[in-house]
Length: 79
Image 1 (spheres, rainbow, N blue to C red):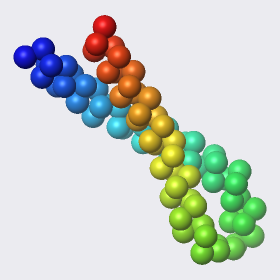
Image 2: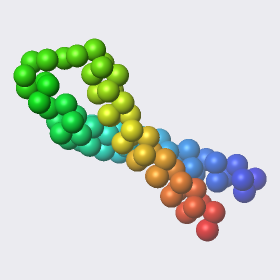
Image 3: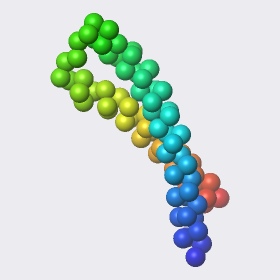
Image 4: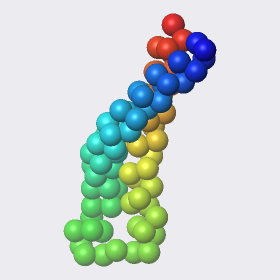
């Protein structure tokens, strides 16, 4: 019973965290895209490689923020 209660708490925190992670990914991804690809975008160029680089630039901060929050929540539930 205790284990299922922990899973419910963790799921609740995870759902709440997804929205926050999305906001973090939008902000950080935009900044990183501007830094890394800004010159190409401002020149009006859009090489084929950007079709995978830009989405990946947003996915990485989303995954890092979500993983950090879930691990933190899991540790909080355990203690």
